Length: 362
Image (cartoon, rainbow, N blue to C red; front, side, top):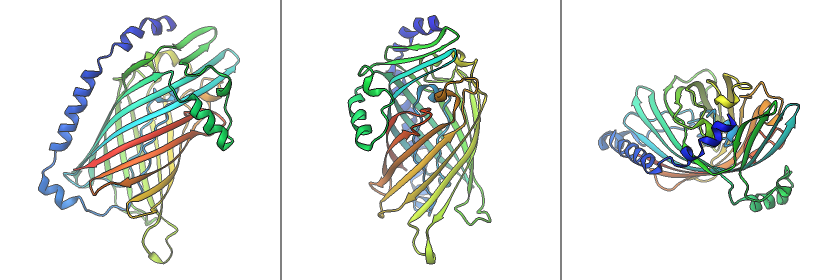
């Protein structure tokens, strides 16, 4: 696999980005035309108090290849309403581990540009779509992150002694180098298509329950760790409710949670240690600070996708902490900004990440 990875670099680097953006442009056009203006005007102000989770992603390249789906919240869009989201994520990595016959090094940065589309089908149904471009590079944020960790008293994890702005994603097992990336790569990520169904309110008196299912198509490049090289399927449930709401006054605090399972296969190079089934969940608390501004603290967890490994960053569960907020620029547009950190122990999530999304509803 090492020779295959090296031999594929030219092919990876030569992926025509112009073709991808033409595809994304078509998606945007479809998003703006799938609903009639009169129908949207009638439904766009429909109440929906459900807490909206942060759409942060674990950009650790070994976990990103699996593509655990993000949450959309405990609401579905009304019939004819569409929501387009343009996201930009960047994460910095510095992980070095060795155990028995295994060793790995993840030093570099990952960038992910994503377009997402949700569309309300009516009767409690909605559909969603997501496509992305993923790049791995040496990056430029090493100095900033060292200062960030120093200021907050967080461990450097060897970052302060490693070469600056290096790209080195390697995994060695039994003397064989199975992953070896040391040059910038850019490729399509896997494409996700799914459906959501809103159920009736339940006895917990929360915001109701939404069941979602999605299929991920292997359009990414497994040699570049931008996809698993195999299709996968996911199902999950999302709910939310009021928190700290004495006297039935206006909702200021909300909680939201997600619980699901994904079935798929790892990249071929990691098939000897990979799992087929991954459980994942999220728990967040949102504070409606102002009419247009809400702040969220969120915990994302998923079981290990590499149960056959003895290395902590692969064998342990991935734990990611997220902090951010959403500001409504207008009734139709909102901007979401968040930062993420790993748990400081297993290092299965990205060391530090920044997430920005622009949401537009029609």
